[in-house]
Length: 272
Image (cartoon, one colour):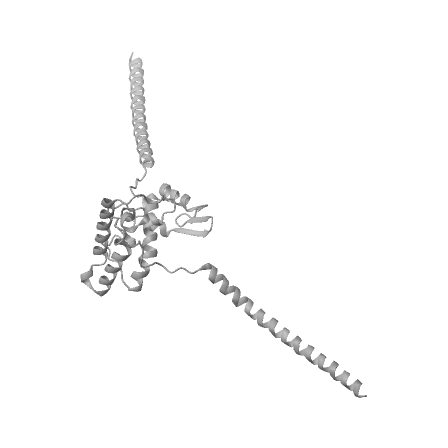
């Protein structure tokens, strides 16, 4: 009887130990599954950016072509609070890591992956390097497109329709606020000059009464590829031209001497 009691106690202990182990494993499995679900949820959660990359690129193109050359000419630094400052562009770090190798060859400066077109590289940035976007308030250049006339540099944009006086007034107000914050006229001669320039270059065109056209002060000077090619061709062909002239004159001198000898020989025959 004593032996049977010992066996029963031993059996109960084994069963209890098994239950404890099973419960622990189940509990651990539950936590692992929960952790996995959390990980999946975190990885599936995409960094959302409420800012148009295309319009931000257009805004930066306008700034680079129609503002930066004049700012650099005045040797002026845009203040950090100025929304036109490159530091206030949330896509600037990504844009600076675009490597344009060839016509249909773009490369990511972060991971060195290659793409056939810039638009595919942009999608790659959105999917793989979205953590490098500083989505802070006031850092979306696309918000300034109304003031900067971005539609004029966006190729896919349809022609503008009838002028809207309310929209023109809003864009003009935004434009003038940019001029005031980026080039405070009261702070110096450079600021005053650039403030007046900015108003003429961008703000005065925001009207429905037939004012001046945008970018009336011009932009970055571009090298004319046609004239550059012509200049190189002329430089290469000029020595050849002079060489041909030299040989031509040399042959003419030889022919003149030859004809003189013939004429002289003819005169000698007549004399004899």
